[in-house]
Structures are given as structure tokens and as C-alpha cells.
Amino acid sequence: MFITFEGIDGTGKSTQIGFLEEFLNGNKIPYLSIREPGGTDFSEKVREILLSTKSEISSIAELMLFEAARADLCEKVIQPALDKGIVVISDRFYDSTTAYQGYGRGLDINTIQKCNQFATQNVIPDFTFYFRLPLEESINRRNYREFDRMELAGMEFFGKVINGFEELAKQEPERIIIIDAHKSREEIFEEILSKIKSGINEFGCYSCECRNPGN
Ligand code: Z5A
Image (tube, rainbow, N blue to C red; front, side, top):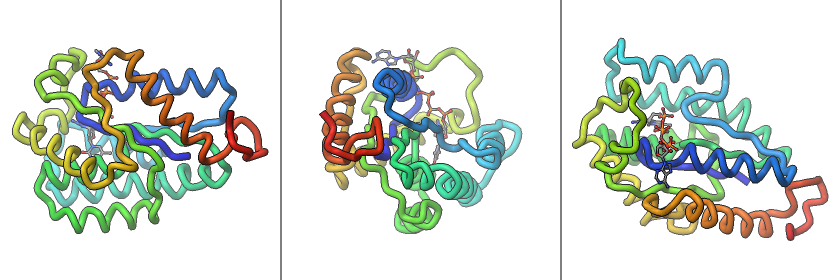
């Protein structure tokens, strides 16, 4: 099962991923938790370039770098883990590219979707949790730390990114589950868990290799 978490910064994705990791550990379900960009030696180096405030990067170059990091991660880490039946959790995946580089930067959405397919070799998440929160509230929640290059892009940009996520959620309601990020951490986790448990029933047991329907 492949589960991704999406939304703008500060909406609570990492918090929920932490809860999910605890649940999977407690239930001895093998999983792999990664973040994008990142997750391989090469992709972590690309992440440093992408988030560093030292260089200006053109929008197309930025797109290519996110896709390069993703291609390496998919081939070396995500696909092999899925082939072994391991649950993969990713903090962001290709919906971020469509939302940030497509809707945010204004690059052609069809081209981006083709790049996403090529970089992932058609890996598609089973569930994507999209954390919906107004921009102002997400900014208030951000921890006081130095902003990275993407976070410095400005309010107008992030407004467009939110529209992008909303559009994607409309287009793929089966895969993309909208999470009302105003709710408490506990309520949100209940929702996520109930969806994932239904997935475990559908995809089969994850705590051993029997692959029988879960309980
Ligand atoms: N990017 C891109 O442009 N294109 C791409 O293809 C990809 C990425 C893959 C990577 O971000 C940047 O790259 C990102 C998109 C871009 N840039 N932007 N801008 P990152 O990995 O550095 O960070 P992030 O993914 O944006 O996440 P974050 O800043 O760590 O935020 P978060 O994980 O969503 O939130 P959190 O850390 O769990 O929570 C934030 C605070 O809210 C924290 O104090 C929590 O305790 C609190 N919190 C959490 N839940 C709640 C609830 N329910 N109520 C109240 N408070 C809460």
C-alpha cells in the first residue's frame, strides 16, 4: 500500500505521519517512511539545492530537479518496497509538483503530468491525504525557523498552490481524501486510520506474508 500526504506547509502532515508510524510500529506492520524531495543520497542532495536560498532557479529547472529526485527515489526505494508488500508512506509526492510547479509557477499541467508519470514509471498512490487549511492559518502554525527557498515564494503563489490541490482533489476523489486540518490532531488521526484500515482489508494482511484479508 502506498500512502501520500499533501498540502501546503504547516498543515500538520508530519505530525500525522508520526502518529501513523507509531501505529504501524505498535502493530508490527513493516513500513517505510520517506519524504519528498529526499529519501536517497542523490535525492537529499537535490533537496539541498532546491530549498537553499543561495541560488535562484528557473521554474523549468526547478520542475526537472523535483522530478530527478523523484525518479531516483521511485526506482531505488519506493518500487522495490512496494514489490515486497511493505507499506510506503511519503511526505509529499507528485501531487505537490502539479500543485506547486503547475498551478503555483504556472507551468503547463499536461507537461507536468507526463513528467510525473515518466519519473515515477507510473507508480500511483493508493491513498493521498490532502490537508486543507487556509493559508493564513498555515502560516501561523509554521514554527519560527528560517524560511527555505520555496517558503519565500509569497502569498499569491501559495494561494495558487492551494487552488491546485483543490482542483486535484476534485478530479480524483477516490484517491485524494480531503482532511479538514482544523480538527484536532486526534480526530484527524482517527479519520486517517479508518481509511488505512479499510485499505488493509482491501489489500490484505501487512503484518506477515499470508496476504489474507486484515482484521
Ligand atoms: N515541493 C515542490 O514545490 N514540489 C514538489 O514536487 C515537492 C515539494 C515534492 C518541501 O517542504 C518543499 O518543497 C515544500 C513544497 C515543495 N515547500 N513549500 N513551501 P518540506 O518537506 O520542507 O516541508 P513541508 O512538507 O511543507 O512540511 P512542514 O513545514 O514540515 O509542515 P507540515 O508537516 O505540514 O506540518 P507539521 O510540522 O506537522 O505541523 C506544523 C505545526 O502545526 C506544528 O507546530 C504542529 O504541532 C502543529 N499542528 C499539527 N497538527 C495540528 C492540529 N491538528 N491543530 C493545531 N496545530 C497542529
